[in-house]
Length: 267
Image (cartoon, rainbow, N blue to C red; front, side):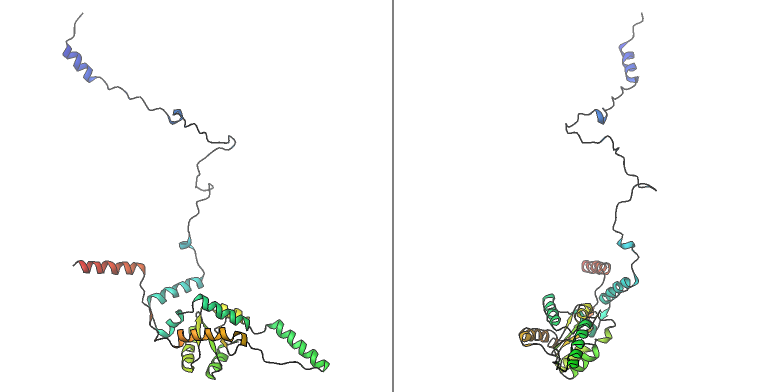
């Protein structure tokens, strides 16, 4: 037998292939935590496939991709333009509306003096006809109601019969009422601007109304009415010169101007 030298044996051990690593145990063979999920064998769990004919996609906010109606686009663009461009004082005054609590009290008072609707008018005329037929007399006392219609209100203000004028802030075209605050100031008639031509229209049984006018109120409401008229007179008639509006840049422009100002400050 030929004996090998210890040096040759060591060289052969170095050239041998390395031992293979034993693969890790599969997940299923791991020890369970002891809590078993209640799974129904009748229903197979499958991952959702969102392809054609597959599961419905997850709901996303698609507001940006909606094809909005033309009137919505126009009112949004108008709002942005009124922010960006310089708005003259005569137009900007319609953004200074009464606060919510005072406006509600004005409208509640106006609802007490609603003019009669078609049904009430028909009933009144029938009673008058029946009374005339029977030979009796009918009390034709003039009712105390709010006045509406821009021409009618104008004549009442010019004659100084108006006690309080309520103007809507969203009249379109604005030229219909843009001169009315100046006329009220000249004639020293208290006026106020409230939100919503539709709210004013609801008082007088119409879709919309540009303005309403109080000429007189009953004795029980005179104290409340005088308080409202005084506050409106101080807020609008006695107000200082109305400032210009608009001139507000967008978020991107504001960020750019901030960066520019920061750069100029560092130099």
